[in-house]
Image 1 (cartoon, rainbow, N blue to C red):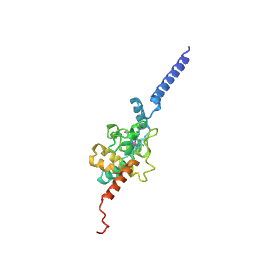
Image 2: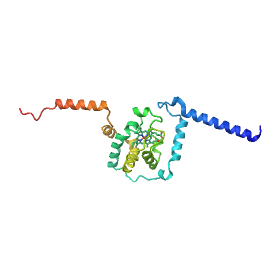
Image 3: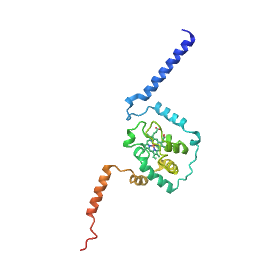
Length: 199
Ligand code: HEC
């Protein structure tokens, strides 16, 4: 075989091997969403996400300060819109999160905390394609809502049990919770003395 022909065959073999490796990476576990991405896949996905984030977005500075009021707003917002995937504590240990591919990461861990404020803001506003992370930009009429959430993500590693308990009241309620709440209210209404009744 001539040299150019050997080169072309070698190149073809490399391409076929890479395609096979890529397919094996993506198609493992029959595309089941309960599987966990391999370390290599998670690394490549994170790297690709970083490359795709505009550089100026990464260096944008949070215009807000972590005041008590901003953190309070963000806590309740997170409890309402983010916690059913991420958990009130940001651990990602939720019923929904466990069934996603990739799973929501632990937002308290260094992998997330080492992202810049601008990167966190970008992710919240634009979401992450091919994952369950939605874009909230079109839902937040004021981008300050997303900046407040960035403040809250920074606060997550120091979240107190008291703050967590308050958040629980703002988590979206399912049918069972509503029924239980209704039963409790009915019971209390029944048990309360009738003040309007004259003796
Ligand atoms: C439907 C589920 C879901 C909801 C709701 C959701 N997320 Fe996510 N989120 C994910 C998943 C899955 C990922 C992992 C994406 C990835 O691997 O790149 C993620 C990733 C992130 C990340 C990147 C963390 C990292 O280290 O890569 C941030 C920040 C984040 N979410 C913040 C939020 C905030 C704030 C909200 C609410 C406004 C929210 N998410 C709502 C599922 C969700």
